[in-house]
Length: 501
Ligand SMILES: *[C@@H]1O[C@H](CO)[C@@H](O)[C@H](O)[C@H]1NC(C)=O
Ligand SMILES: *[C@@H]1O[C@H](CO)[C@@H](O)[C@H](O)[C@H]1NC(C)=O
Ligand SMILES: *[C@@H]1O[C@H](CO)[C@@H](O)[C@H](O)[C@H]1NC(C)=O
Image (cartoon, rainbow, N blue to C red; front, top):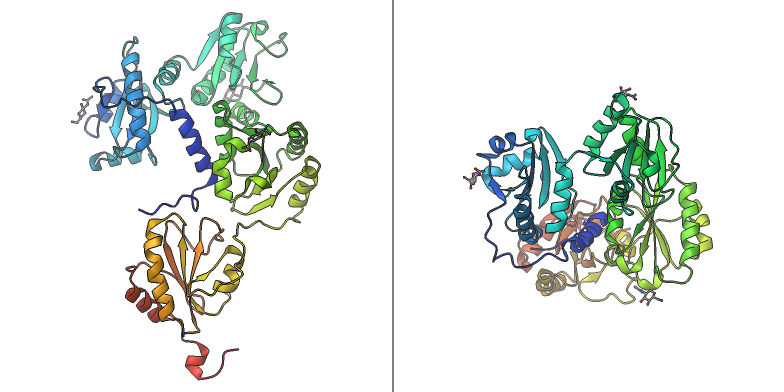
């Protein structure tokens, strides 16, 4: 099957897949040797009945062919065996979502990728996303925490030190007593957001590690591993407090490097619907501090103005570079990607240029960036070479009937097709109104809304008058030529016997 890697895969998925490999890196591989017995198998016939009998249950939706599921299986089983010794038993279950008869169940839970793990509470009436690790010990710790109270009581400085971890967002409610409407609202919110953040509650703010300790009256204190490190709220309306917490948990500048504790924030960054500015450079370079401080200033200046900021270490950014077509000698570079996929780029950036460039961008003075190979100097083979910079002239505005192949250099089916396309091109060489062409779709941006390339090779035909058709016939010389002859426009010359303009 053709792969579409590098064409349609959005950047955040690429980055997620890199993160996935970090999470999975220490998975053991002795999956065959472990008899499965602790993970409960469920299917459409007994799922509802089984779930309804339990206050807390974890369910993995998997597909037998999915590689990440196979890696998870032994870890999940090991975690299930450890968790089976808990009182009450903490159940890990699984559903083969690929099985025809379980498909309704999977769609009921909105399963769109594998594995997807859900936490079901109160007989299945509350469903949450599992957002924990995927190796056995991590699963055990996360599931134990999720099965306990949404907010844990902090009774001592030791408790406080263990709850308020350095690299996570932790939310602690400070209350004169653990009752009343404000406390209840805090607990409701903790229940709602428990899979995203850690929650605690405390009577004595002096036990907490950071922040003002002489608090009077109920306060919600948010600890975070970036920016101001501590924020206090006196808001107890559940929705309003949730909004404040979510706003505070996006860093001014998101850091992307190989440290997995940053990755939840990277995912948040790519899930926001604003313009995304990304500065890539080598974190070991000597002027890194100057970059960080200028970039931070810009991020503060544009906070809440429709653009969010990420700084990425070259060491972790291979996927991003492949996606954008950047080269290492272009760093430090800044790229802004808008929601509709336009990109703006400045390479070999100096710290002092950050402020002015972002302003130019905001003022609409920066031209969009398009990834393109250089325009070839000679282009006289039967199959013509198109690059992003010549797509308009050679395809859209050429007034010719163009058959265009989108290929990837590494794709085997493309290599098989190459000599066939050559023969097609040679056969039609004397027809001035027909062009057979190819474009390396991994090295050239295809403008949105033109050709929809989902795999390689993809063949599109654009008639002289601009009709665009996907070629889905057999990849033989005869069929391709038939298709072209059937769908081409007759040229003005052929129709009227006059010369074209
Ligand atoms: C649910 O049904 C499947 C298929 O019949 C079976 O393999 C599985 O053990 C059942 N699970 C429970 C908990 O009864
Ligand atoms: C508690 O939350 C409810 C629902 O969000 C809200 O109507 C109420 O005003 C809140 N109470 C306080 C003290 O903020
Ligand atoms: C980053 O810079 C350091 C020190 O100059 C160098 O050793 C390292 O190879 C660089 N990393 C990359 C990915 O270029």
